[in-house]
Image 1 (cartoon, one colour):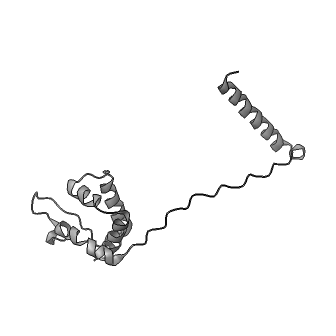
Image 2 (cartoon, one colour):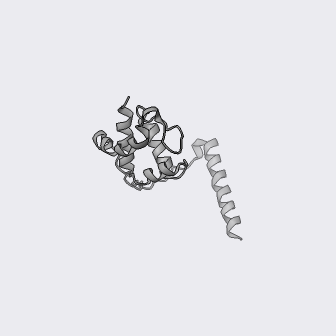
Length: 130
């Protein structure tokens, strides 16, 4: 018998016997003891944002985003306001620039220099601004 056919027959037999046990619970055989659970890999520690570190990192952002009227000198385009945005939005935006999902050469270059911790710190600080 081919391995695929054998596997399909085995799966069908297990399914049918399980279905029969469901239909007639008195005739069901007791379940075998469960195998011990394999411990899950420890999850990385949650990142705790440091607002003071974010303040220091934000000096880079001020060059464009701190300009009066939020306009860049050259080329002329509107620069979005980042102060007061939610930390979640800012983290997502910086992460997407870093991963190349958002296209803007300057922002991609800036975000590539930030670690995950830096992004959390920056987002926490910038979200406190008015």
